[in-house]
Image (tube, rainbow, N blue to C red):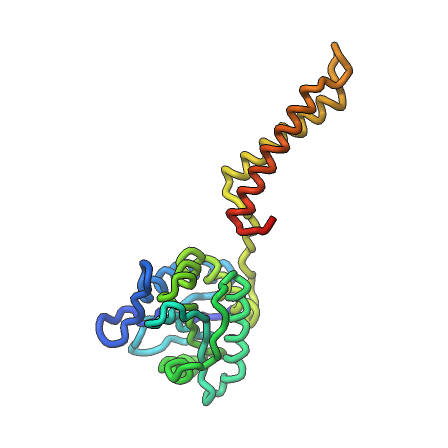
Length: 252
């Protein structure tokens, strides 16, 4: 399986280009460190070997794929968009571009709503300093990623709150090119307490229906209160469902 070089953008610089400070909490350096900590066990579970690489290393270890983690920043708080860069002058240029395009598709599919910025849209992306060194160390694909703008409130909220999904998008990209086991998709849409409550509500409605259908030994006829109880339970359940839909921003 693949040895995945993960460079933590700007870490641990304290002078020069130290990365964006963001708008609402974590700095770029803090975020990429947390992202790697989240990504590392996911890559291992997928069958790959994550390799942490800091900025400006003395040398680059042997690797099969290289991704540099970065987050954009701007004085314009409305600026958004994810992007990636690759070196067009390297022998792995075609493979790197394909890898980057797949990552961007997975990132958007994970829920990032900031849209795309053009590939290599800045000189820093197009000529990222580590890509040739990573390629020389064996990387079949080498890209630098901008996950979004930490200086934009919507981008910041998504990246901070969904670091697991951001990591999963990277794992799925590696798996698509190097095999392995993709991360299991979390299909749950509610917390366990809410799920347990709704299950109980459904069970009580089912019990009332069963009472109506079978009657009882003393009076086989359906008691009108049973039906009233069912209708009340259904109304309560509908209110609960409506609250969940609002929480998930699902239109009625």
